[in-house]
Amino acid sequence: MKSREICRGFAIYQNRVVHLESHLELMVFFMLALRPQTLTIEEQPPAVTYWDGASFRHHTFDFRVINRDESWEYVGVKPAALVVSSGIKTIFRQIAEQLPPGTAKAVHLVTDADFSYADRYNATMAFDFLRFPVAEHDEAITRLAAEMIGTVRIADLVKASGLGAMGFRSIIRLIVSQVLVQVKRDERITYDTYVRTGVRPTEASTN
Image (cartoon, rainbow, N blue to C red; front, side, top):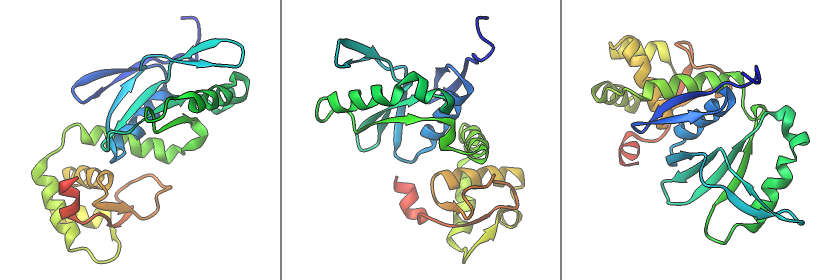
């Protein structure tokens, strides 16, 4: 009620509810969750204490991302228009310099200038389609992918699968797992998008 700019929401992730403070935070969360190296994400992890040159202060990051190799990293989200006035880059630099060795892999600041509308659209769609995977559909598309030569339009791959819209959903999931690769990565993914093979199916199944 205090501000028209506040937009709180939530997402279902790994059978739990993740609470988010803004639409920007939601988009960043989707993109982090879709990274192949991400094992899990903690929102609003315990505050980090750092020395700012005059006193000890505390900062709570938006996310702590734990990777599959057991490394982890802090992620802060901020609108690009507020980066300078907030002094957040200085805060993150001080924190990164003072983290004990072996604790965090990195400290990241992510703003809305770091990704496009197409990135937002694709991440939202992919996160949704990953919530309810159908193994037999993904296996069918994976077999088709193994036979692909060059680039193929998604609409043609869907037609060859005979799965209709469910085939499109599987293709999106296989793009996330890198079995398929979007040829023009700066565009929204549609039926007219061209894809090529990426990770070999045998490799993807073991990741």
